[in-house]
Length: 341
Image 1 (cartoon, rainbow, N blue to C red):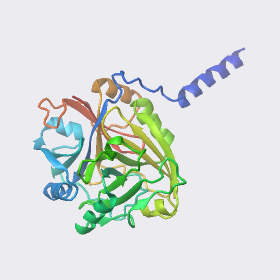
Image 2: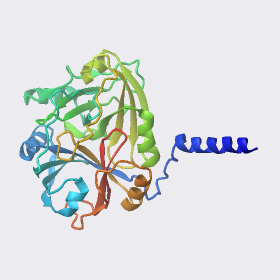
Image 3: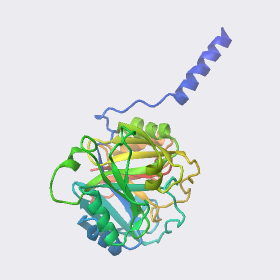
Image 4: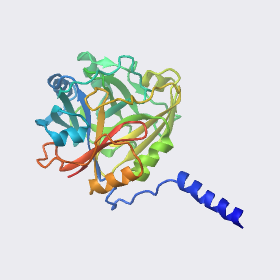
């Protein structure tokens, strides 16, 4: 009987270790209510604003310079001073941050689309050919060979056209068009604009199931669709020979989606730098709004999730558009800014 009891207890312990966390109901104080913005660190904010507004039609919403202990705690950096510019395209926001002090490191020049520090925003456009011509006219650095149309055999992605390129700092960006019946219906409405808004931000992940356990089960985002993409079109889009990807699309109640890119082949993508900091140019941070930032912080710390912020930071003056928040890393090292408005 004692042996049976020990085996039973061992099975209970084992199941507690691998059994997935329950999916959060949307009324949970820890569930994400919106993806409020996607942010990235830039080396020269004037140059970056000129690029995003002059080439991609973003509009400046706010421009502030901040410093102080609360911001040091938030970003996990001592003695920072940063200039933060919020841009808007359609109804989505992009936040550019230049660290006036301390300065960070550039993006590694040999970065590839399957390295796990890869992140981009996908900008929906009304006309791929016209948008591509604009990028060529402005001499934007390409990543893709040319715009790619995903093939008809791929039912989940058939007819989608996309093109990767880079901003002046080397951040990857995408323009994308959806055929009728795919994507957000907003991207199909006539309006006369060429660049429409941010459909999603995409991140490279090592293990889709681990990422679902974090974004879906811990944060409450909804899995909206999956596909497996491969072939010459995908190779030329990502500029990775032999690319075969498992792609998973997650959606919050409001705001752009978050897309996982797991490279089934090749598997030689490099891990996220362990010493990455918020002032390094590889740094992106996706802002998620929750009802109770303290409750989620406590829950994630209990789950031993990696934090960037040493503690919840109360900003008081709301220069950045929220009252308090913290930075945390997902299983691959991508940074999320969890905020409470």
